Structures are given as C-alpha cells and as structure tokens.
Image (cartoon, rainbow over all chains, first blue to last red; front, side):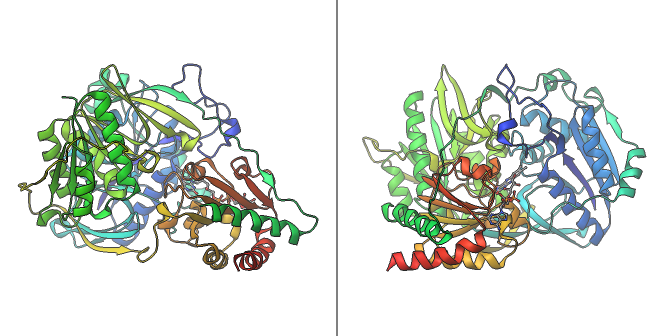
Length: 271
Length: 323
Ligand SMILES: Cc1cc2nc3c(=O)[nH]c(=O)nc-3n(C[C@H](O)[C@H](O)[C@H](O)COP(=O)(O)OP(=O)(O)OC[C@H]3O[C@@H](n4cnc5c(N)ncnc54)[C@H](O)[C@@H]3O)c2cc1C
C-alpha cells in the first residue's frame, strides 16, 4: 500500500484567546510568539497511516505545501517514521484558498506517482476550510470518504480492498472501497499521534527532503501564487464576547452547591 | 441566473437544521431576486416535501432506489446533475456529515467555489460573501466566493426559519436520474449510537465533561445528574480522545454544534475550539477547579471547586429541588 499523506503547518491553535491578534490588513492572524505546529488532524492522519503500514506494509510519503518552515512539519513526520518527505515550496500568498492548495497537492501526488491512498486531515486548526481532501479527490478524479478514523486493508494488488470506518452525526459507518482513493481523517481515541523517539528525531534531522518549486510540478504558478481564484478573505475580525461570570456565593461548600442547584433549576424551568 | 438551490437529505426530516437552510435560502433568493429550488435526496419524505413546498418555488424529490440510502459517490453524482440543470447562483446545504462531505466536491464539479460552516450570508453587488468562524473560533472571517455557483454549507441552526412562506404551493417533482453503477466506495454497515435518544443538537440541557474528570467513571456520575434535569451528556475532545466518551458526543469546532438552553461544563477548560461548538447556547455554566479557566469568560454562573466534591452534593440538591 502506497500512502501519501498531506500535512499542513499552522499557527499553534492552542494559544490563549488573549494572545491572539489580527494584522492591520485584517486578512490574517499575526504570528507573535506563537509556535508553528503541524495541524492536529494531519497528525491523526499520519498516525492512522502508520498503524495501517504496521499491519499491511507499504510506504508512507509525507507531502506538504508551505513555506520553508514547513520542513519542520516534514521532519517531525519522518521522526514519527514516515518513509519519505516532499515539500512543495509556497513562495506566493501565505494562505492560498483551498482550491489552490488542492491543485498543488494533486499535482504533487501525480508527480510522486504510484499511490493507493491519499490522506488529509478533516480540516485545519487555522482556517479550517474542510475542503482540501474533497477537492484533491476531484482534481485527481478519485472517490473520497470523509471523517475517517480507522482503515483496514485486505487482499493484495488488484484484489486490494479497503475497509474504512468513518464517524457520522450519530454514530459510524463502515465503507468498502477499492483503491486508489482519498480519505480525510478525524480524531478518535486510537489515532492520537505518537510522540517520536529522541533517536528518531535525531535521524530525521539528517534525512533528505525532496523540494519542488511550483514550476516543477506543472501548475499555473502565477495563479497559484495569487492564491485567490476560488475565494478571497475580505475581512477578519475578533468577536467581542466577554460575559461576567457570577460565582455562586455561600459560606460553605454545601451552601454554594445549593445555590448552584437553584440556578440550574431556574434556567431549566424557564426553557 | 439568480436562483438559489437548497439540498436536503430526506432522512433528516424537517428538523431545525432543515428549517434554517430553507429560511436562509428563501431570504437569499429574495435578495438576489431569483427563485428558490429545493432538492430532497433519498426516500420521499411527505412531511419534509410538503413543508418545503410551502416555502420554495419548486421542489425536486430525488427519490429512487439508488439514493434510498446515502452513498457518497451516487449522491454527489445526483446533486451535480440536478444543480447543473438548475444553474443556480448559490447552492445551500446544512452542516451534517453528508453535506460537509459533498459540498466542496459538488462545487468543483459545477465549476463553482465552496465555503463552509457559514453563519451569515451577504449578497451585495452581485457577489456572495459568507461569514464563518476561523482560527478555532478566535476570529470571524468574511469570505467572498469568486466562482459561480457559490456552494455553501451553513451552520444551519444559526439561521432563522422562514416566516413568510411563498404565495403558492410548489409542486413536488420526482426525478429519474441516470446514475452510474459500480461505484468505487460503498457503505456496507451503519451504526447509530444515539438511537432512541434525543439528538445532542436538539437537546435543551447539556452536561458536558472534560479531561479534568480524570477517567470514564465520572461520566456515569454526569449521566445520573443529567437524568435529574432531562439533560444529555456530552464531552470535550480531550475526553473523547482519552476514550472516556464516544466521539459522536464531542462538542466543539470539530464536534457537535449545539444550542441548548443550558450548557453545564464540568472540568472543561474552555479552549476556543470547544467554545466554537456552544456559541448558540443560551446560558453557559461551569464547574472548574481553576478560577482562571477561560470557560469562566463565557459563563453566566459557575463554581470554582473540585468537581468530585460538587457532583454528589449537586445531585442531592437537584433531586430535592425537583420534588
Ligand atoms: C483543529 C482543532 C480542533 C479542535 N476541535 C475541538 C472540538 O471540537 N472540541 C473540543 O472540545 N476541543 C477541540 N479541540 C481541542 C481544544 O483545543 C482543547 O485541547 C480541548 O478542548 C481541551 O479539553 P478539556 O478542556 O477537556 O481539557 P483540558 O484543557 O485539559 O482542561 C481540563 C480542565 O479541567 C479542569 N480540572 C482539572 N481537574 C479538575 C477537577 N478535579 N475539578 C474541576 N475541574 C478540574 C482544569 O482546571 C482545566 O480547566 C480542537 C483543537 C484543534 C487544534
């Protein structure tokens, strides 16, 4: 099984609200002191891929489209034991729209070659468009299954068949699929990303990363650099929403909880 | 064309989400000066179609054997054919699993652009703009769609239902689409974990547990508490990732978007991604040991205390008060 997994480097989504700032052009967030990290759902996807490889063998290629700094995301993927890494350098718009991203990733997938499974996270922790996987599938003419949290493979070669479990609004579904296809990954208790071993981190620092320019993957580089042919962010604002919390009063814990219970009942009776 | 098409899954019925999509579609069609077409996918649902016919200008019921149960590739094909014929300026969907799965691909097939989780639609000077929350709920972006049709999935419950209705009742047209067989993916098993219970999205009261609970046992205590006030129990991502509660009950940006009258967060920090799921809750309350937990910035009332001490007492007091 040849797996290509798409990884996105983003601004640490767990920074506290009070540290979050927007740039003067009102189009994107200011990095400030925040770290750049790999989008969590991409890591859930890599973890899912690693477990699949442990059961069925195969090769995992980590693919990123981003600035030079995205090398860190690929090194971490290598440290987690992805086999190879490819970076398509983004020297254009820092937050290209999802169609632009999908076009680039699909072109890179084609250039990488033999591939049974393309995996992405269900959405990213920054812009969270939730479209990359679906649009890659369309660009490549492949089927797509979203919100997947587990994959099993049975059979080999042309008989290979995938059993894909995915989350739905009220439970889950099991799908049978013939590769090649695209899946987008969501989190569950079994694909929490592994912590790479120190030794593997050291090895990954020396591993080669293939780097391609936009010109090398055969896309319309000018359009990709502009990054807004699909949609454009015209404003970004921080919603003002601070509520003053009333802490329940009372001299003893019992009194406080009594008051808490009163408030709860008050609200539920008013519904 | 300035028409608007809405796509709904018959299976979900005429729920709050469907009402939000229909309302949003009616108003957008009004602003654009176009007609409102409704497409319902799946086994004919008379109640849904009758309700929609009272609001939309035309109703297309895509009710044929191949579509009786959702299959991603077949439904996508059906929607692409129907929307392709209607050539609308905008296509609106809800934010259920299936709609989210199909919307970007539908946009691609139609040569349009998609944007999701919209909380507001703005039609101005021929352009369609959508507001949505980004950066894990820390900011709201306004996004202009550059291609037509604009395919938008909505945070459906955030939109008002239609109040005016249309002048005449639309007829419901049944389709006979030519759909390819031998699709490369097939749903072979479906499991509903929340059968027989009210849906989290429609719950009036939710008691939700986080990582601070320390293990799955505490969720049993929350369930007991929930029983006393007719609440549903939910969880944060950290609690679901720990395997303490099933993922279908995860609340947040990437879980359920809920709108209860009361949301009681127990040992949940209040990360922006969690809060993104409860922005439509009327009253938020919290039990947290840390007075500086961000959750208190969103709460009407709360208590700073170890949940282990609070829950047994709270159960006692609520039981007494409910008598
Ligand atoms: C892209 C992305 C999407 C995400 N989507 C979601 C989502 O949909 N839903 C979601 O919930 N999260 C989501 N997250 C994760 C989110 O950022 C937080 O990590 C998560 O919500 C934290 O869960 P928590 O509050 O339960 O745990 P923690 O952050 O560990 O907080 C535990 C809280 O419990 C309190 N506590 C500890 N012990 C006690 C005690 N004895 N009594 C009372 N209180 C106690 C602590 O003070 C603390 O406030 C997402 C993150 C990303 C990056």
